[in-house]
Amino acid sequence: MFRLKVFITFPDGQKVFCGELFTTPPDNRGKIQGSFQYSRQYLEHPMAFALDPQSLPLGTQEYFTDRPEGVHGVFEDALPDDWGRVLLAKKANLSRKDQTVPKLLEVLAIKGLGALSFESKSDRVINESSADIHRLDSLVKAAMQFDAGEPMDNQSLQELFSCGSSPGGARPKALIKKGDNSFWIAKIPKLNDSFGVESLEAASLKMARSAGLPVPDFEIHNVADRKILLVRRFDVSDKGGRYHMISMKTLLNAEGYYYLSYSHLFQAIQKYSSRPSRDIELLFRQMVFNIAIGNTDDHLKNFCILHLESGFCLSPVYDILPDIHFNREHRLSFPQGAGTLQPHRATLERTGLIYHVPSPARIIDKVFQVVSNWKNVFQDHGVSIYDIQRLEKSINKRLQMLDPLKSK
Image (cartoon, rainbow, N blue to C red):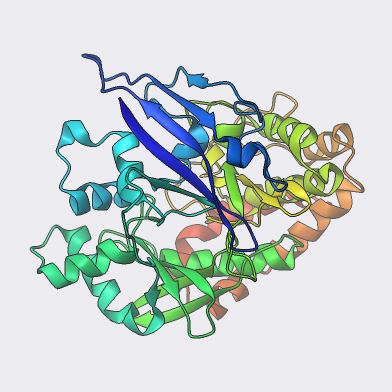
């Protein structure tokens, strides 16, 4: 039996032992049996809340999971995807069969995003995982070496291990700390990128903010002849503590990223948000914005809720890009049986009315107005003319379907 202690860091910086994970070795099909049990210390704490209100309500019982990974989704949410997991496995020198979720959580330890951390030994000492902003240049070079599969010296590997494994998704990322003690995620280009992704994401965040969506602070830095996007972490409180995060994939008990719809997200917010009216309006606004720019990578892990002092609420917007892979189809389907292709404006207006969004037509108009200026915003953020030309047909076609004059 493998045991892993789970800790939570509250927004005020207080760290509390909140429970234990218990998992078996994988069986001959690779399935792991597992459970979680809250600690009495956490259950009696005045700031305690359910780590996952769907699957782990506060209680003294042992919560078993049917997931083949052996842990509840809320704990796996702390892990990176793809690139970051490869780096974690390399860091711990894990064989392929040992690269299980429980083992990766043990390696992750205190270095994940969100408020949870993991320890297998109480005497284990783990240092701060964010790199100083002045190390960004060497960190970017190390990340690009790793991405290219080039031989790396021990110093470069340690550079990545210290701050590059916890936030990495499908793309290279690293945790950065500035001199004012603010914490950021550095998004680093991949060698095989066919678009200037970092500039495109910065421009998309700018438009999202102008359209009325909550967006973290962001900056573009030129490092090693590459554009690096820094995005301020919204899971870190002003006091240096942490906000607990749950992906919509976990909250909806979904094993795949792509099989549900925006309707399920609206229903989850109605059920779990401490400010449902506000969050439903924001989700509607984000749905319309994703349609307008062609953010087709709108899967369940690209939406999450945070636990603030007031309770659970929808997080700021993150990971938004135009349709650089020309998928056309969105990962999530749209309400009213609209499917995964862009719905007509009238369908969006009906959706807004069903979920009691105030003035849905006005929100659509606002998003349309902001995104209609996309070329200027892209140019202001360093997007190349070549990239603009390749995206022009797709974005303009989407805007045409939202145009209040042409869509009638």
